[in-house]
Length: 128
Image 1 (cartoon, rainbow, N blue to C red):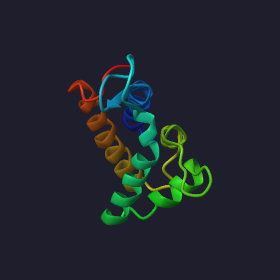
Image 2: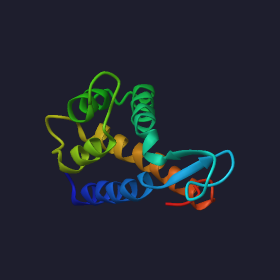
Image 3: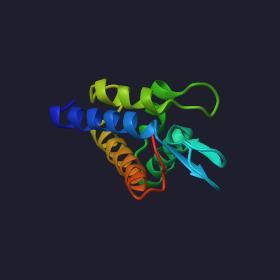
Image 4: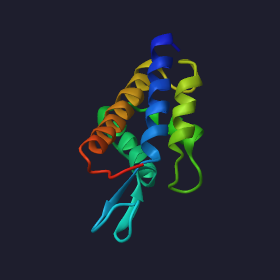
């Protein structure tokens, strides 16, 4: 793995650590007060991985699904995003996933997590 890609994934790990603890409120109020529905960004972990799998299939990044299954599957239809990010950080290009598919996965996760972070900045996510 290139040092650039490792730093990129390490940045994603830091971003997810920060974003996953934040929460949003639905309805009235915020998570720090009474009322409303409270969700954490981490509640969308499965969706984030499924977005990656769907986009990889559409783009022909054929090794991404197998890599996710080997490194991040936690039972039927359950995935650990932190485990996936850790695997992306520590894997070597040869063997588990080729460099192009690895780059695709990192790029797609960067886009998704950056979009979530942007939503936090717009006060859509109320507090942390």
